[in-house]
Image (cartoon, rainbow, N blue to C red):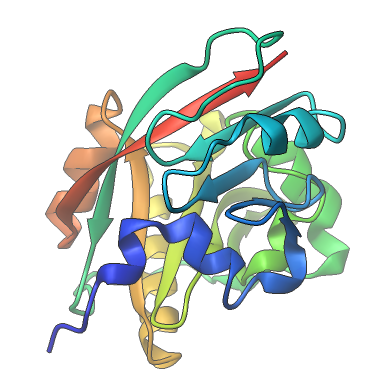
Length: 225
């Protein structure tokens, strides 16, 4: 049975005011993750974001506002707009898990960061993995695929960092990790969702095939001095 999805209309804001409040930098009606955790922020009430952005830029060179176009200080470059699809799933995925899936811990940290740098260096920060649970597939003691949890609200958990090493693609590792992660989120009595750039047609097709549906489009604004 579906639940109220209003939290997902402003997912970063609602994560920072609920499950991840201890990781937030609070500028009033504008909030950002601490730069060590994630490069994302959001705002409410049509807030003039320029002052908050000016302050936050002293902590991190490049970051994102997940909302409508923010107002920037006059000395900043124009924000770069990215459009993502927000996708959601309400049913367990019926897909076989043939590989051993291991929960990522501190001993795997260096391998995790090394793998992430191949694909998502801008989005994954030194403590991003502490925002949720991450799972991996290892071959010859080397991490070759990973998927984990990022934004968390009262009722929803975002699936993030769906990454497979280029030498190990095409083996179905992502499907198995997504299936495992989705099941884990349901066991926490929460609903899985994710974000994917509208240009990433391959992953979008995969997510749809696995049972995710598009809920809405979401704007990500990249900000730098």
